[in-house]
Structures are given as structure tokens and as C-alpha cells.
Image (cartoon, rainbow, N blue to C red; front, top):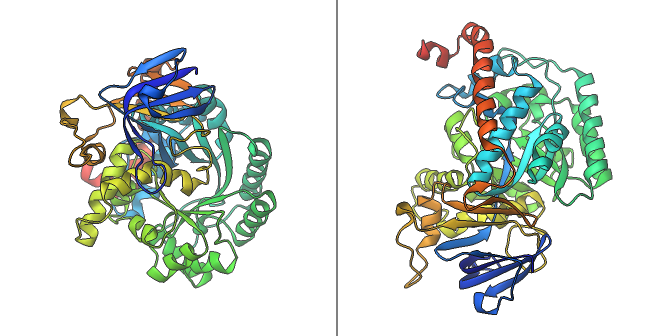
Length: 463
């Protein structure tokens, strides 16, 4: 074997339980896992990592993210949902350059890597640029979603106007992305109409047709709040779910993100048709003041995952924080502390996310034959102590509710060690952070006038 992790506690997520193996060992040859079992049975390897005092588990899966917005961290909080996009993000996004977005994506990805994320679902326009300039150089697995948006400007008063040429270019980019990366092991391409209120009927029909022809997934924001509901109701006279249902889009190749503005019957309909769901708890709690219906979909036996969304709303791309947030706010919403127990939440961040993105045949569990996407977590820090196995494994709850993500020690993606003993092996973190600070400061300065003129609630309160 090329690499072995020995004397560790494995959480494999195999079969029904968590598949915990004490004094476990994991063997990797090339980019595949070739051994999962007791450490004593592990053969010699070229490199051996001592996993004592560590949990070894599959890498976390961020099932929905817009990392290119990371430079706007702290820029759109504590304001009404109806204002968030136009008066919060808009003034600064209009002033972003492609270099700003690239720098932001690098910043967001290294934040995620540091806290144990090995797969990112990147939802962005011109997503190929993120794949080529960030994910491939960093050796990070990605589900690349080409965002399609025809809106020329967000107006709170009337229906949005569409530019069909934007949609045509976006669909062309999506087709090219799927054609190029359709068989790529590290990049899964998808179609991404941003939301039903942001694309014309002609475009959404075109996306559905092209995705079906190429057997590709459609990854889409669905029923994400008041702004979308007003637009869709006024334009089509019905709800988002009912409109896309009539178009025949609800099937096993459809990934619905957010879904917090849906009726229970609509959730049932999506689950019955094999739709997969992704919730972004920190983002939706901050932007909408609502709890995503992750538990509702799980209770309907639908595949579900968790994403960080974007930094300007919730603050960042730390999946351990997302998992804890999902558990806590769901318990509060339902006034039921048994909702989303720790073991279910930990699955959401690994095998659940893999199923939601349709990549569970290769990642999400520690199994022989699967890709070696693995993390080790140092459990010797004060906030994770004590770690016991009798009368039960207390560290399952500890990982969800006490980990900050900073305890991640090794990050291995497709057999490559990206982080070893807490340090990046080939990524220049210092220069990325430095560039992010410099570009972020300039970006906020450039957008200041537009932000003040929009006169949103946040601008008034900051003043």
C-alpha cells in the first residue's frame, strides 16, 4: 500500500449504523481505499500515519456553495430577506472583478479544506473558471454547477426583465461543461438554473431537455423565500414546485436546494419522485429567519445533504458548524430535542451529501474500492475531551456539537494528502489570505457608494 492510517478510530458509515471500528486501520493504494479493518491486520505501507487519539472518517461534503462570494464576508447580514439580494449583495457584486471572484473562491475553499471538506458543490456562472483555477490546482473534488440567470436587474416593485441572450450563453456553457467533464472522476458537471424567478420559461424548458439528453443532473434553488414566491405567483399563477412539476422536472436527477417555502404536500411530491434535497441552515437562518426542512425530507426517505451556501450571509464555509446548526435549529423549530440526532447529522455531512449529489458510488463512506477521500480529526483538544467508547461512543455527539473544524489534522482527497499534520502540502495559504484581505478591502471601498445609495436597512443601521 502507498499509505496507511493505523491505531485509529474509524467511522466508516457502512451499512445501517456508523460502522465504528476501534483500533482500526485504513489502507490506500493509488487513489482507492484497499483496506478497512483492524489495525493489526493492516499490511506494511510506504507511508504510515499514526492515528492514535484521532477519529478517521470520510471527508465532509459541502453540497451547495458559492465560494466566489467569499470576499463579501460580513457584507450582507441582519437585513430583511426581500432586501438581501438587491440592497445587500447587489451593490458589491456589481463591483466585483473576475480576479476578485477567483481570490474569494480560493479563500472559501481553503477554509473548507481546513475544516475537513473534501468535496464542494460549486454553484456559479462560468463555473469552469473555478474548476480550472481553484479546484483542479488544489486537487479538490467538485460537483460543478453552471448557473443560468437571465435577469437584467432585481426590482422589488414589478416582474423581472429577462435577457434571453444571457440564457443562451449560459446554456451553451453548461452543455460544453457537461460534454467535457461528463466522465471525469474529480469533476461532476450539472445544469444550474438559478431559480424559477430568474429564468424564462423557454430557458427552463431548454435546460430540462438538454439535461435529459445528456443524462445530467439539474441543481436548482427551489422555493427559497418571499421574493421568489411573489415573482413566480405573479408570472405563472402558481408555486415553484407546481410549475416545475408540470414541466416534468421532478425526478431522480433533480437536486432541490433550500425548499423552505414549500407546503408539506409539495415535499411529499418531490420525495415520491426521487428528488434529492440540500439545506443550508446557517444561510437560510441568517437571510430568511427560517429553518430549512432537512428533517422533513429525511422523514420522507428522501436523500438529503447540507451546504454552506455563501459567506456574505452565514459567514463562511465550515461544514462542522453547518452540521451543528442544522441539528440545533431543527430541534428548536419543532420543539423536540430528539430531532436530527448527532448520528443522523454526521451522516448528512458525509454519505448523505454524497447521495444528495449523486456521487455516493465513489465517496461518502470508508469502503474498499471507493475513492480515498479521508480526514483525521485530533480528539486530544480540550473541547473534544473526554473521548469514550463505553457505555456508548460519546465522540459522535462531540464531533457534531463541540468540534470547531480546527481539529482536522489530515485531509486526503483521491489519495493525495492535501493537509498533513495540520499544514497544507502544496497550497500557499498565507498568500491566499493576504490577497483576499487586499482585494476584499478594495472591493468594499468600490461598492460603498452604491451600497449607501440603495439605502437598505443594514446601511441605515450601520450609519
